[in-house]
Length: 161
Image (cartoon, rainbow, N blue to C red):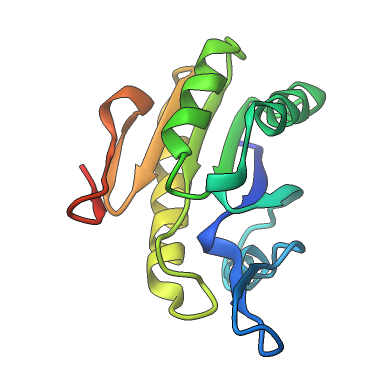
């Protein structure tokens, strides 16, 4: 089994209802990932950074992500990311030429509201990244798992293809 680093950047995957404001806020401690992990027969190394909706992630945040990847020795990385700009971050990582196996995933429905999509996307990313032995940047969303250039969010239809 590969040693995998999970980097949690926020996104809808991590949103929770705030009863004071009525908003869905990013939960910064990775509780959704911890909830998933406690049911698996493995341990995960999780690093929580950025903590933003992907619409608010900028190139400074993406550079923080690159530096975080460089600071860790793991060759295999899963990144939890918001879906709206997952493609921009994937391209940024690819352009950084990190020479690692990196897969980005997320969810369009928060884990806290319905855990099925977030869990399925994470499980798909985990399985795929364990099976490949090729450096690159990949995206895993809603059963579509390919190199980052081949996966796009169809914003008109509301799903990835």
